[in-house]
Length: 120
Ligand code: HEC
Image (cartoon, rainbow, N blue to C red; front, side, top):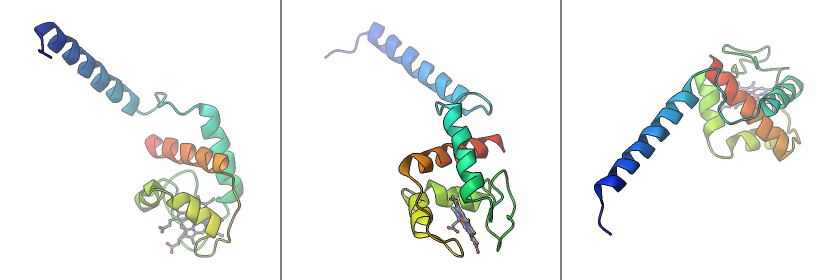
């Protein structure tokens, strides 16, 4: 296939649009594709399952044994590791006993954590 100038131009426009879209999505406060309802449900899950020990609304230690805040870098790093969040919840961690949250609840929780991280 020969690359015509027209094709070249269309490609450049497309790449430009993608870059502009990513830049917009990166701005705090703009929708990032996760429905707000998932974020709200995730906040409820966090309050019910995590807030006894963690500060689920920001940075800094929570009420229990230096449990990290949900916006702390170390916490976010751990949560970003594939599968880690599910394991920590289902197997328990430190003083936290195993909790049987559903996959949907964990997805909501992740949506909340991601939104919370962007809001900092
Ligand atoms: C009974 C108390 C308790 C509850 C409830 C609890 N945690 Fe924790 N969590 C801790 C403590 C304590 C630490 C770490 C303390 C330390 O680093 O010494 C921790 C650490 C973590 C970490 C960081 C792990 C790491 O790699 O260091 C993540 C992620 C985490 N908790 C997620 C959650 C989530 C999500 C929930 C709710 C589903 C939850 N925790 C509920 C006590 C709790």
